Amino acid sequence: MRVAHQFLRASVSADPADRDEDPSRPETVQAMQIALEIPKQDPPARTDLLEAAARAVVAVCLDPRAGQDGPWREGLAAWYGHRIRKVARRARNKAWRDVQALPGVTVTQNGTSARAFVPSAVSEVPHAVSKLQIRGTDLEADEPGEVPEGAALILVDEALAMSTGKDAAQVGHASMLLAAAMDTDSAVAWAAAGFPLAVREVPAAEFTRAAERADAVVVRDAGFTEVAPGSATAVALPPRR
Image (cartoon, rainbow, N blue to C red; front, top):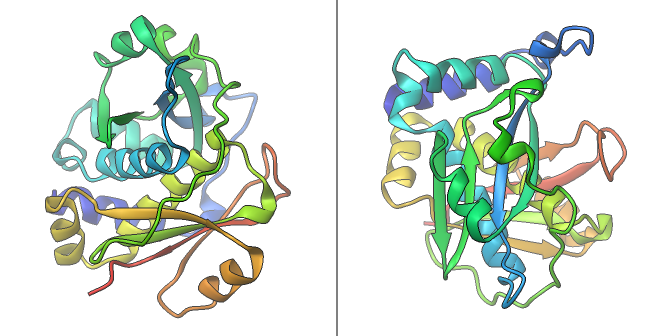
């Protein structure tokens, strides 16, 4: 895991100008797919699902296989080297069970599950994942309560009114950038604890104040969907001691 963290840290701290994509070269358009389990009956709480997604994304990045030669590391390397896209999709029933066989990590929180997969070119997404719907992920806002002691905190600007799927991609980006901002000992300890974190959707003024903190990690969206390019969508703050 230490090698996986050092790989993440070195990759995302590199000059973003070096990360590009060329639609004429499909191999350069890379994305991490995220499956959100959303049963038709008794759908999950929005916050639980977002927290599961955030934990799943960083778990893929810090999986020990990311520190070893092989397909896991190769998939991440190609993704880190281009624009870091994420695509969240809805899954249920057999479709959800089918994607469990594909390389990735499933996180379950309060009975709610999300699975993040090893990234790939968008032209090479496995059929079991590509057939999952991108639409239909939206869930009502909820009231999750107090942030647990020792949890990292990821704030989302509720003024942007993003869909649950878009939020899932943003909090996943926040969790991996937060891990990259940590020193290796801290990241390993966070991973050993199961990546405890809390996601909260907050008013714009509170979001802006958090983004100004010295220890804040701010996610700025590329603007492919839902929000304008450069929008600050999420802010990650390290675990409280």
